[in-house]
Length: 438
Image (cartoon, rainbow, N blue to C red; front, side):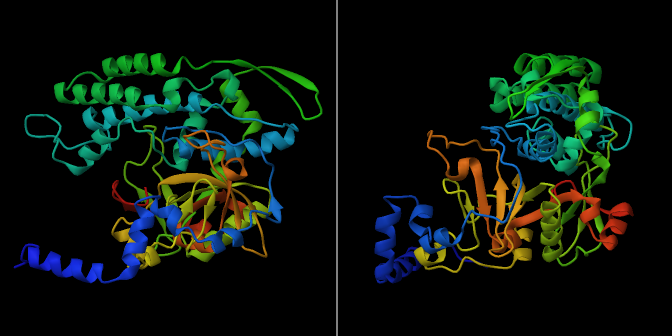
């Protein structure tokens, strides 16, 4: 039987700590400045050159602000490169608020159908017909019915159904980038309806009312007009969102998500689906095909060299300096500051939830000599204090950091090996909705 932590034990530990002169030095520094600044390795900063051999167009970075829409921003940023190049644009941005409006509606509708509907998938019910609130899948859906987060397939689900519009056709409202109040209202309506076993249709009327108040009403058509880099003005006429997507977006079905899932029981060259991981009722759930990290890296490089940006998911805040826009395996040397070994295997880190996909961005460049990637983030050009970010919001990632913290990349089929495509197109192993990969 484990004994409680005793005073004698604590005193013994403290004596050993006090006897180490490096602790006092570290404490004096860290109590005055953030530990990450103290531990920042200047040699690593100097070595991480942001110059890259292959560099795609530099559009002004977008800004999701305090919202959790990185997955959407990253996908739309990936798609906007081609339209900007094709039309010779200095700047272009799709409307994130337009897709966000429908994402909120669709997520709520999915949750209500799962919890109260009769079609599969649906939540288990008790003998008296009420939703079984003790069920883990039920708890998962109730907890995230209006969350901002999502995956790459969520974007394509929305685009396939609703199309896209340029940002001027539906710009961000305050609530688009500051979502807690809106999300709380949606969650309340969903949960109240579940507890009362109320009407899905009535709940959706209330939710659409709330979302419209926060985000505005999405346009059903707009006039597409722009000025190119040469100063020439173009007015292309009126488009519906679906027509605009059909004209300017690539075939959404050609994209494949290639991942490195380090868990030993998750086989390479196999596809994995995640239960309930979709935002639109009736659309497929999230899927990735598993590969080794070198293959993941290789398909990303091939895509960049083919002038196609790469959506990727990662654990963003590990070994990262946001002001410098730098990611490297040993950028922040906490081990020397703490005098503690912080490292263990990627599989172990994943299985203990030390790392998981937390953010999506876009790879827009690569250097063959340094093996560095150019990264397009969606956190704007200034930090929360208004201080300018290095690289105007673009960053630099080492291949070592890629190997440690990138979970998946999304590329066109043409860049993916045949054995992985065969797995992607075949039957998948189903993972639970709470799996760390989703």
